[in-house]
Length: 353
Ligand code: NAD
Image 1: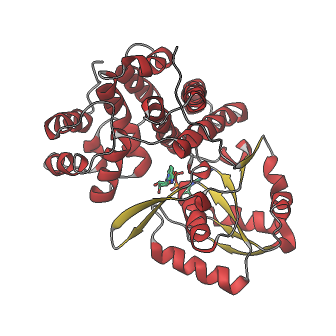
Image 2 (image 1 turned 90 degrees about the vertical axis):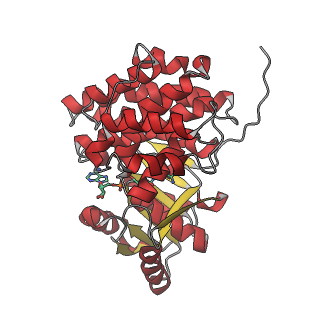
């Protein structure tokens, strides 16, 4: 077999295991820092305050204002606290929204980040930051955005509601599916993507039935690390473009949009690269799109864009935007095929392939 690839490993340090968040202070010290600002969403403020309490004198404050899509005005408010407290690092406790705020601060200040993820979205291991200003979302990729340390502690995901566990897991799975056909894929990204998909296949349906099973939560978090890492190392294609278009222009919720679109975009691309997507069919059973759709249905994920408040009339505009400046994709994209794909996703149809 002819092999031809470029590989660079992620420099992020990963500390994975039940209860590992007790070593947060130690990691702050290993980064040479003494003044940590703890970040969270308003919803997780009490957890962030408890963490700050445990960190003792190395925690100089808590900013619990993180919100979805990293609005620049929220970052500016947090930057005020950074300056005021003289923080020399941030500790982000939460999902992609909190991680996004920590990345936005690091992008502006180069402060090191310790991230303790509590969802399965995978943002903590990518050098990618999406920010919004004046209703527009822009994305930057920069080495300084990648968090230095990530502590994966499944005990902190026990409170993640089942529906959010499922959708954030499917969000992460979408990174892995697109990594399988990425132009710049390499043997390691493919191995990680397949292992990540296996981890979610083995955990998400069971988490729905027994959400308090710590070992299952750990397996999903393992999937999050793997799928997030491939998002951070290889390029994404049609699926991410469509989800950014829907979220950016029609304000559809991030994780749910990924969950609904994944079977459809995977089925679309499976026509062009059946061999590269064969592991998906093998892991989820049957066909690529059909297997993913059955999996989403089994876990109770949303299946139809119409249930996210998108009107059928919006689909024309969505198809137009999603095919403007398209990302590289293994199957050529044209407005008519994308319009048809969006129609199926809007209706919640099971893909046939
Ligand atoms: P989120 O961070 O927005 O969290 C959703 C809600 O769940 C919040 O209120 C949060 O406080 C709460 N929550 C999180 N963990 C909890 C827990 N364990 N128990 C109880 N409540 C909990 O959700 P998300 O899906 O993780 O993140 C979505 C955001 O992440 C989007 O803005 C998306 O663009 C971004 N994202 C970025 C990347 C990247 O690489 N840049 C990758 C994936 C997602």
